Length: 524
Image: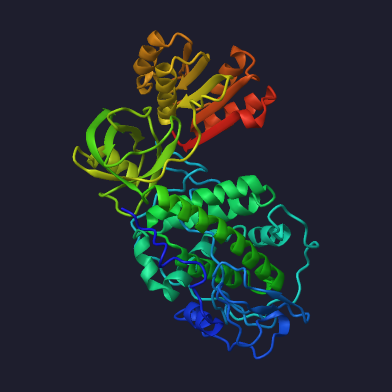
């Protein structure tokens, strides 16, 4: 189903007039303050049209103006240094979406689902987001005690951006709550894009903020991340015209949460950053919409529980699903609508089109439990666009070291199948850990591949202390004892403790970072 509309989502059609933007953003959230009649304190010149198709001069409070004709149609709002906190907001550019794949440190994902970065905790049985009240009005500081604006590859004021994250540290979840309260109050129709419980969405928003600000000094990394977000958001029904309201709600949330600490420099930094990020994301989504659907419907044709909490699922997409071994995609079940979790494909691309997933259910994980215990043949899954690392990259000539725990073995199986099929000459070492030998469910499959692919070495890893031993150093010690891996490509997938411990030991061998890829699956 193709849901990304290039007509309704044209750039330059979001806000035709700043007064309309102010009224729209503020409806149901705060009382609006009048648009200033003169550009004092860095506000907008009176009566300017901020649509991206027209030329508009915006004052910076120093008698200078810049041309706004090259903006991407992202909605704007006035800023006044003497404005009351949380009041007088119109539309701001939106590029950071709530559907990011990221999460914040300390959160734990559903086991068996890929976290790239780690997924947040599972949602509780809570209802729709509730509106938070704004803090008491406070005068925003006229100037920030920040370093001079530095030059960055993206042209961002990274000092100001990092400052907003640091000053809201410990309050980021509340910031996310304010974001959604502002968004749904000003644009109620966007509520239908989200699941009933918003806990996962809030954590993803926070994680995306941290990820983007942390990557602002690396243009290549940030552009690649934003392009991936833009393409991936198509499966949620997101179109270009949604970016403005989302950005407005986020900047308003920062204002409300930071109070007197929020400054004109912070506001300008986020607006400028959003312009650039929105353009990257929307253009990536538009390019992707020409070639691929927003998601793939796939019919479950096989479902088998190998263990009490682990299932093998095979599904047949209705149209060609172009992925590479080692990649993952986001999966949504009709039994848990609007909830998406990331899972690695466990099989190389097949002539019959089947795609295999290995899913482990832990605790109250809504999606994983539905996939393990309630899914049956004939169910329809939605698959997001493939993402991630090509484990069987034919352009690489280095031997391969794979370290896996639990269902982290799934993408490695897909890669080995591909290497076997094309008679690849590289040597592959696989270290495969489990809670006990019974949990090494894929060991027979690995051994059968090894019979045909003679360059494969498999080392099962089980603690002598039994399944209760969770020593994170066990895998790292074993891998290090086996030899020097500096001339190998390295892939790690599995529980956080195992991945991080093994990663530390590999870095002690001074393996170049560009040769290491990690997929963190959270828990065992």
